[in-house]
Image 1 (cartoon, helix red, strand yellow):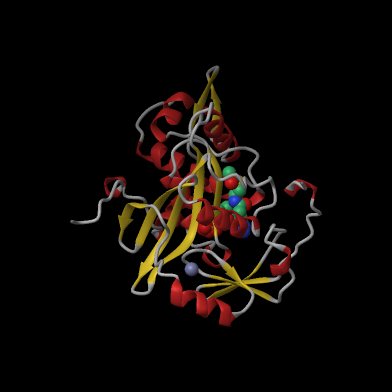
Image 2: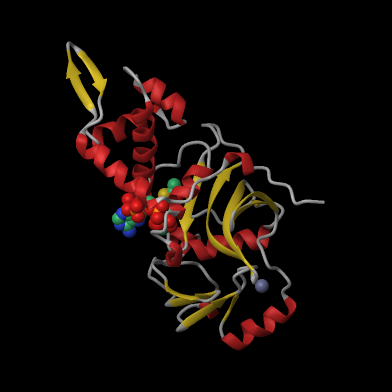
Length: 272
Ligand code: ACO
Ligand code: ZN
């Protein structure tokens, strides 16, 4: 059998239609041969099954009664929800999710064996159903903590702060190496959280303390502080000190008023 990494990584798909969006794919994804190289591949936005024509998709929609991802809704705030999906219990759905996300991920071999993973899928709800925005996955049994394997915002939802929301919703540190976009987004998120803490903090603070209070790893705190140029050498000590540029950028960000995770809404249970 041929493994995914042996197949030439030539982009094999053109465009995808998912819900009301049509998006260009970025990378190779191992959809079955007969679905590759179509002008547009049509995806059911709820079960993530794929079809070669709008007609076949609409015929499928008559039978497909999903209006949200499978699994449990574990978070709800305003129109955003998270669903928790066990790869072992929802093989087909999670494989479809992997195929879809591979279109936008190149840096690593995506895991097509979905059974060791939990998937946390973020959706935006409206009267038509729960529309997938993105997700992160975590390995169930992971020697080094409970690591994030993969994180993705579908391209039509990117740059709206959802990536930060996904990062905020996860616990643990991302699996390295990060993609370029992954690195930019994690850096942006870590900076925001660290600067927020420093602005509220009185007196000196150590890297360890920052790491503890933010749940960001020591190494990630360190690198973020270096990037933001927050280290000052003073009387033989390294201090973490905010500078005006960083404060100004933070004030601007605050005005943007991005969505936040409200931890009290985790483990949301549907009313009985
Ligand atoms: N160019 C420059 N900066 C960017 C870009 C970009 N294209 N995308 C994100 N950023 C930075 C910005 O600072 C941005 O904040 P701003 O918009 O206020 O300036 C910040 O990251 C966060 O942006 P979000 O809108 O919160 O993130 P988004 O919803 O776009 O999702 C993500 C980010 C998940 C990385 C998305 O780009 C994606 O899915 N990319 C393809 C898949 C991928 O590479 N995933 C990460 C792999 S690594 C891993 O899985 C552990
Ligand atoms: Zn369907």
